[in-house]
Length: 458
Image 1 (cartoon, one colour):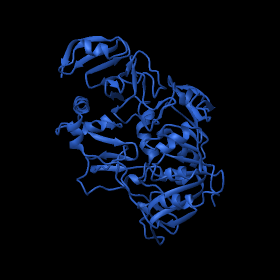
Image 2 (image 1 turned 90 degrees about the vertical axis):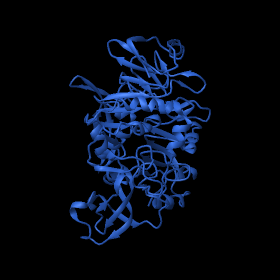
Image 3 (image 1 turned 30 degrees about the vertical axis):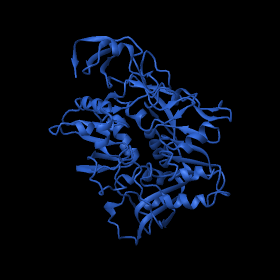
Image 4 (image 1 turned 135 degrees about the vertical axis):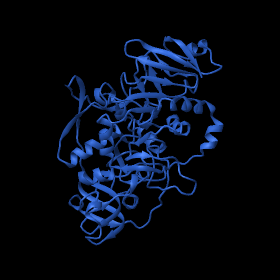
């Protein structure tokens, strides 16, 4: 069915909940099914997911929120062999949900004041590394005193969806965080093809347990085999022992979490914060790939490939947890239901602008859900090392990299100091780690700052 130039929505998040049998089948049609436009939450890996299609040279354009560690994808893009249309993860989910409901466009605060809204992002390079195709400016409008950008919805020729269980009427059940983009994408394909681990007769799934009704599904196949790879695993004890600087940052950041908070933790250092959270604090952790009530890392050998966090590592369930689609998960975010978000960054400016998704011409990470998470009324903290490799300064008067958000950061926690950013008073040094002098901070900070009356020594 899939011909040259087709557009395909592919469900999953990382390697969790991906339609791997359908993707593998498509790689066997590499001569016929090429110049594809793939729409996916992220770029897969070099050894799995849609990365397999890239290996075969079948992808002409990728619409996604996150490149991650897929070196093949990054090389294809930077060498001009593939187009990359980057969009924030929450906006991508809503564009797909809206497309499935025949809503042509909607307004969102996400991305306002960045390259994603203002235009000028390199969608395609030529073979010499020069810009060939640039993104266009998106119109904005003011609602209730806030600026919003207009985003057009997404549909596709096909949707490839992975379900845990399907019945012969096309009704679908997803399992845990493997629901992610699958439910939304099932509604937005002209032809939706589902691969399921199990297919049962109509009536064998309790109606109240159905996550996606069969009206959206045109075809069902039973998956022949599943690798069920957990994309990322780590040894927490070794991390703590090997990098005290990161542990120091995480320990200080944990102090910002209070009882009853709903909190989202980003990639990198923020993921260590849970290990330093006081046991008498009850905090509910949200992960944007579709879970509220994230628990700690599982015991070795008890990992579940269908139960991962947004950083694609295994997690457990806290009592009272719930699973949801990607669009519902980001609806929680946009609806200002989170109290605190802690993220990593490449750069932060003295007025709270920050950049964490691309180093032009060198590194394409993608913003994932970060651009959505900071476009709310909740508090946002950056936890990062004070300087980058090569002694490049990260706290600056003005960010030189493309922004993730403007004026959204209220605190910076690094391995040598802590700053608060106030809209009126600017950037203020509040904490110093033991053994660090004021001159050390000044020498390694690319902007002037005020000093709190009583600087705390950590």
